[in-house]
Image 1 (cartoon, rainbow, N blue to C red):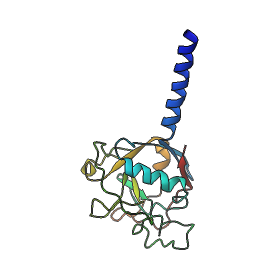
Image 2: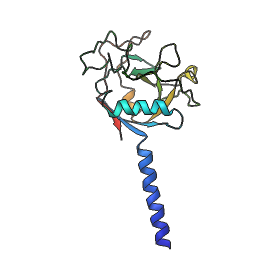
Image 3: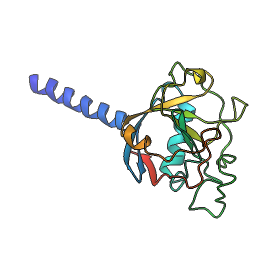
Image 4: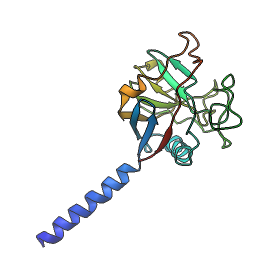
Length: 184
């Protein structure tokens, strides 16, 4: 009976590890690898979209087009911000998205603290598509105004190294880019 109990515990521990690993993403930058934990229980549609675009390679080569020191690094324009695409246009980066429909807002109780990932959007709360940002510092004015869906759990020092843009606009003339972004 003890063997059965031990096997039962081991089996469910392994299953739990497998389930948890599905919610971890690996973001490769020139500076190093970043681990991101996603929160599907908080923002299921944003997590699903993020994983779909990531695992299909849509974020590979996408620039960090808007980076404001002490605030956030924005990326994810898979249309105009992808250096691997014929549509790449740095002057338009930040105005595009994917071919998928926009997402409805999923405001959560996740505070916009250092390392939090959140969906970028226009003035319309239901306009998030593919773009996202990572907070360098706490930004409480964004709480419950933007759909936060994940957090950097390892490698934030590499996010800190992303080239900063103009202090006012955040525009980056020679931006860093995502090398790859995939589920762990």
